[in-house]
Amino acid sequence: MTNIISLPNNLQIGGTDVLLMAGPCSVESYEQTRVVAKSMHELGLHVLRGGAFKPRTSPNVFQGLGLEGLKILRQVADEFGFLVITEALGVEQLPSVVEHSDIIQIGSRNMQHFPLLWAAGEQPKPILLKRGFMSTIQEWLAAAEHIVSRGNEKIILCERGIRSFDPSTRNVLDVNAIAQIKASTPFPIVADPSHATGRVDLVPAAARASLAAGADGLLVEVHPEPSSALSDGEQSLALKSFPAFVEDMRHIATAMGREIV
Ligand code: PEP
Ligand code: MN
Image 1: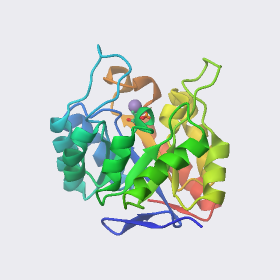
Image 2: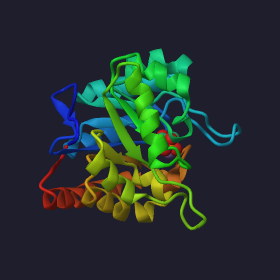
Image 3: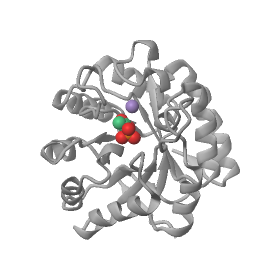
Image 4: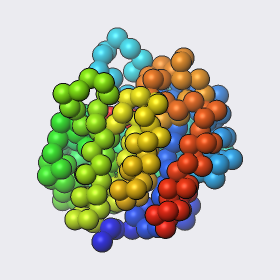
């Protein structure tokens, strides 16, 4: 049985609701973040994602706005009564991320960053633990146990794709993992079809498959103008195509006896 985790604003995850968390890969400005949030509000969504501290493979590209990004996220979310999910990249940033957000993301590259897992376990806010892109399900669950061992049981797992030999997609969405986590662990599981595919043309299909496999939520990148995004534009849904995407997800959720929130 899946744990139901209560969230602020009467939201929860792990029950019949499917939490559709959306927003830009990186917070780039107040205007960019707000225009996405406005569309989410019109579509009846409630959880804004956005990176302020970014784990970029190259040091020579945009690294995120840092604390300024956190403040923008919080300000925009509060305007619409949304929750914020954002990544804590290291132990030293955790206090400011905890202060400004409602769900703390631990990224794929940090899944086995044990001091960060321990620190996350010692504070009360829910943690979204992404699967390491080269980690087994067993290693992922062991990482979750590290958080639990310090007292925080509010863990949401996120399947975000694993590396394969095929360069045609950035990663491969492990749909098996979603079904397996659902069947044999107490943790709510969400899918990130953006990083799992790396290709906006494949995001809707990956998201549909995730919901059909039992995912309790989605984490999706959306940008007002993906071609000018400072990170992950190639996998970000354009804002103009977002309403149709949400509509599509509502159909799948309904077929699963669930509701998108
Ligand atoms: C993200 O969601 O912003 C992110 C960096 O994802 P991942 O850790 O899965 O690469
Ligand atoms: Mn991204």
